[in-house]
Length: 201
Image (cartoon, rainbow, N blue to C red; front, side):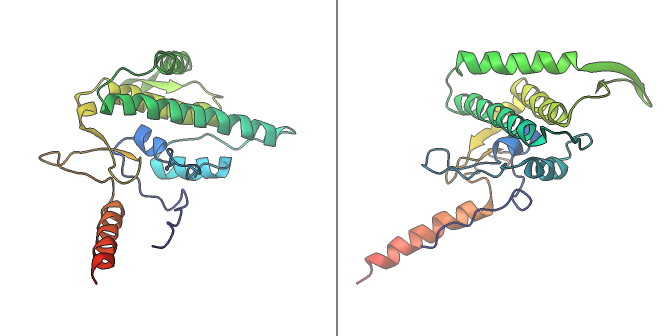
């Protein structure tokens, strides 16, 4: 069997059904020794955000740009893995870790403090205050999506792919979906075929 080819963040399918799930799915193979990390640079995050329809603000310069980039990446990875553990607990029917819930609550509170009520064409709307950083905007979109999903009846549709550890909403009529994407199902069938042919004398 050939080794899997890691899809770049610009090529990976967005199959989660929510922004927060597509963000969680930017890595895989968490149970293995070498997780398949796709957010390795700020450029990767910008590519994902553009594809997911998340605004990231303007690029900024500065002498400590590389250091800040690493700090931003570490912050985004922390948000992502915290959400994964919370969603995984929900799928398994158990209570999430207390510290993960506290982190999500803190991020949600911080996000609300960064928003202001403004006039919009169809009435009043909340928006991030001017000057918010790109990372604030990325985290705001992800946290807002996660909080909305966790409070919604749609959270009952949340599943973990039987082949990889990607998360998705099973919105099929009878909730019989097993894999997050077709390639996962194809991979399972290919392994079964390989094992079957190996047993033939």
